[in-house]
Length: 402
Image (tube, rainbow, N blue to C red; front, side, top):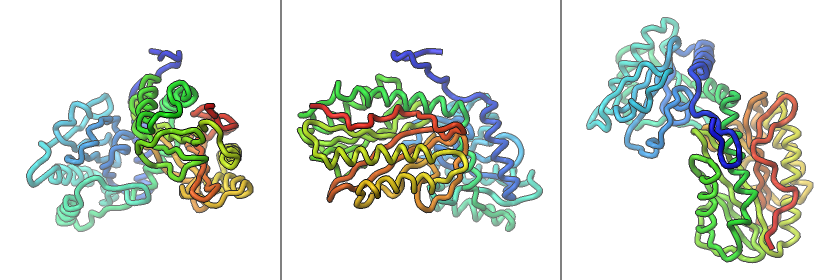
């Protein structure tokens, strides 16, 4: 294996065929329990999870992509011809393609034929599972989806679509150790950059210069891409955490937050850090301490058998006691993996039970004064013996550059 300049072992890219087979068999077990005869995959993350198809070509919305998972046997790819070579690997054997974009039949007929073929081999069910729930979508034109449903119904009125959300959700929430290796690596790369921030950022820089410099340092540290970078700076705090740079100059007295989602081999880190420049007011210093302590409480609650509600209430209690005047994020963390944010959510209503191997973020945030907020985030693995940190723990006191 190769090592980067920090002597950190770079995880192998991709996965062994046994990893894909394990995922497939678990999915098919869930399909059998739910009475599904097939499952239709249309989105980037799910397709990568089940087939290993990884490409930035998803940035183009022109072409639809499909994978059909039968109740028995390997997945079948139904994809544009341009993606055939990228889809080929030791696991994917049946790849069917058409010339896309097509004037009037962009894969619908080929997908229809494939689904009919698969359902014909499944004597017990004519139901096709597809994502229908929270945090999901169907990535194909609605007109084409309606056309597909019409063709299937005309072929056999018993054919219908059912909800496969929970099958995929439950499977993807618990990571394999190979997945965790990738998540650990990218989080450690980003941690290097955060810890060295004052070596390349100083007052007088514009925020667009800061964003650009941060991305360059992350790439030099070993990530594949900086797919997500947001942040803000303001006197004694900030009022927004999702904006792109605006050309504002970093000044003495500013508090800066940078929140990044770097990727390695298709897997994300997602955490932020706060920094002060010059003389920072006491309210911001105290708010930093409160969200840091809230994260500690969240870590203590993040153990198998507890729920996301338990994590939420543990952090919420600390922030309320620390003078929180409200929150504007909507939740205090989430799942992490192939997507920047994945289920579950740390909210007062999400009763998802935590399991060993879940990778989550803890992200307590609070409004501590009118127009000022403080947000802190870490990445970790839920373990039986206590959490494993993926991001390196932030300083207990706000780092300040004088």
